[in-house]
Length: 326
Length: 312
Image (cartoon, rainbow over all chains, first blue to last red; front, top):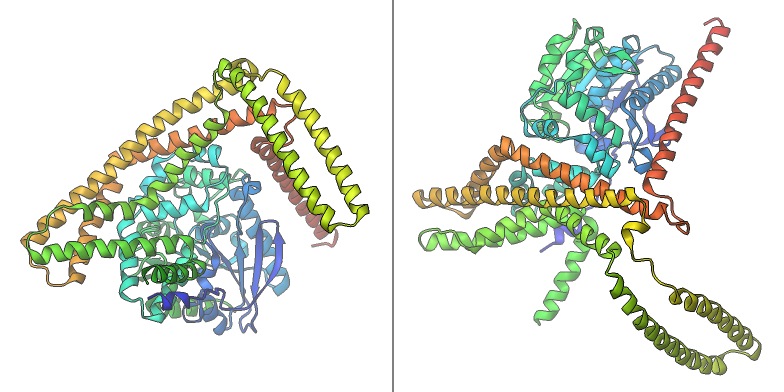
């Protein structure tokens, strides 16, 4: 009965890379390739879940697609925070992005690069781009939560909790806590509907393989460092500071008017984590003259890993980057 | 035959467990059960009218066990921790001291018996020189420990807990109990709200099924999931739910905070305690992070100075 499940094998990271820098928790990865274009791409992943969703397996690897088009791809891995990382703050993430940008620019002898942020990584990318606009040639934001004034269940929950109490008790927001919360947002579809489909397709090896690749990624949840959790729930979700122009890093205000570089936004219409309204007001607000918004009729994860997104959205998205990489 | 079949299934499941994430495996198994209960409902439906029965309750338990468990674990944690540190009645302890002595004598006799048995084996298998060295060391070790233990049990145990631990420890304990009681109330409300919502959606499904003709099992389970999902979409975003969830979470976290604080104060006030508490480690981590940021700042300044000195 369980023959298909016994064959499940999970080896993410479809592309080869080397770790070029490590800073206790954070790592900078460089994918091996022979780039044809001058401007490198730095992918800033979210600090929730793991970055290999963009290089999950051959058929749905965004990284592989980018490499094939001759782009030079670098990626930040925020690691698995432990109790010892409780005092890591958002400013440390921004500082490490800056370190990586300088490192890459020095290596590649360029003065700016393409910054590609994914989910909360896109929020970090927007903050970085507004602080250091001269170092960002192109800004790509994938499923970006920038406007937190949304009505999806997850946002309502985030607005109703006191993150300080969670941090005082637990130190970090643990991966298990996050997993349970994400399931509870939509318990019947995620804990029943999805698995009933699996039971219907138990003999289909391809289905089971894709299913468990996704599940492995979904449940591979690093903790969020306590101070980061406290800050992003309070200042981003509850006070919507980035949109209001009151958010700062080390006293430096985040001014969205600085986002004048070419910007590409990739959003999923059925995204229940980052709904389109988390992006659209921001996208309309930034003064960039070279803006493109691509949508796909999928959910938050489907944007990266569905065959439909790869056929329709990613081809155009990568071409957009390539056209601005020389 | 049945036993063999069960063993084979157990081995198969263990193999699958090794390959899947823990959460996927649990949800997979629970959904096997859910499928069986929905099949029972489908059979009942085909036989005539669908009614609320135990299959609906079993489905509920399978769905929500994974959500209730982490919270229930905290309640078990409470039982464990407070069972361990609870201060019993002083007379009870004094009465137990006699019992402890008797128990000690019994254990000593038992050790002597084991020693005799062990020595007889040693005589059979070990050369003379090892036998003497082993015997001598073991006897000396036991005597040392025995002297220490006897002295220890002669003294009165410190049982007047409120005066033994620092005042802050007692205050933390009282706060912990206060938040635990609030948390228990909120958890019951949370569970009740989820149960009621499920019950409403199950009744809506029954009404829908009985007033429409559902032709296949697939359609039956799809409609069931859809009706229950829609009910939960509404409930989970409702003001009532948000209030209960945040209240439960806050009280749960405050209970954890003060339970740990109480234990930490007991540990910190014990001069024999060899362990650093979580708060002490946190303080060290904080200092390390502050220093790291200062180092990074200095590195940046040095780089800037080097750049300027190169005329950059």
